[in-house]
Image (cartoon, rainbow, N blue to C red; front, side, top):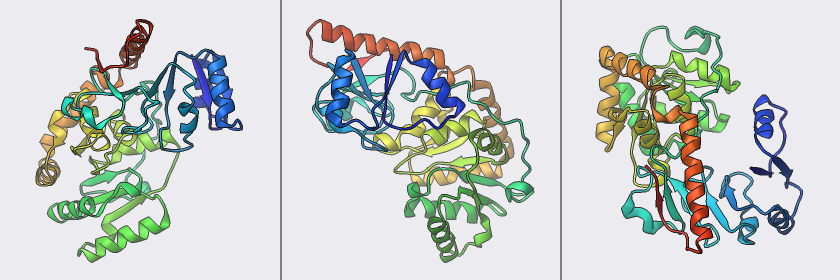
Length: 338
């Protein structure tokens, strides 16, 4: 297993762990696209995985040189690359229903549970935060959403404001992404007749502490058309239920994919009205929310979402099937494993 690193070494324990996992790791951040492609080809890579796509420090031109016989779009970009030099996209049947395959230039490879890999060794800090030190009210229901602020579109925000108005004393805990977004969100809440003190902003902190502070929230409210992805799995790992609204495209169906993989389909809604009604019901019915939290606690390590060894086995199975097709001189095709 080889890594071609277009980023940087931040010296973290996670980086050290990643480095140890590879047989070889090459820094390509200073190489031209052509030289990086030559390096990949010289190392006789069989399957080349694009973990960035059009996000981050993308290096699509490297893939356009076809340095590996099989090239795959996975994880980083939740949608089609629209490029004939990418053979497969890794997904699941919640994300890409069979009738949506024609919208993808890649052939779809279906994992049996969720497409998203998760690390069951992620540490949650032992620190027990209090609501007071987090700026939260001691009483009252705490809705939260730690998604990047750019995912909060007007329709979603208006929905949240209706939910807050319906649940007396409730607050909405958001990520303090940047000052401009924070000020605009406060302004919009005020314009909708809501006291701005009911929006509370969380500053960024190290991941173990961030996961630990989830315990002081009651319910995570997802965004649409772009769901929580890593932030959804963070919340579930920390024991916080996530209420999602399933959309019609890959990035708007990730919340549903994750909730199905942890056996909490009751938190998947299909309309704005259903989403709002469920949020309000869970806020005013403490027993119902307690039952869901207990179910999440039971399912956390007994369902597929955080079963990293099972995920690894399934991922290696699909790579083997890709390679078998190539060795049999067959063109890429849709692949499903159960």
